[in-house]
Image: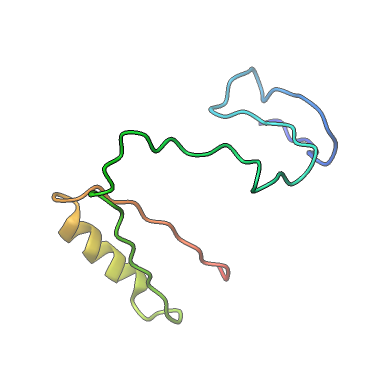
Length: 88
């Protein structure tokens, strides 16, 4: 795969074209106030996401707990897992 510097404003391709995403060129960090609002028409707000936060030191069983939860709940619910391990 080609490597290149993204520190300057430019357009480019990756080894032959499409690669599953685009590179939007931004002039700055953007604005929360001027952001595009999500589409909420037609939502009944009855079915909502349930969030579970799991934390603990290395080796305490966080991954094993996540695996057990996913295996137990996957047939009944749509699941998503977001990880945020800043140490490894």
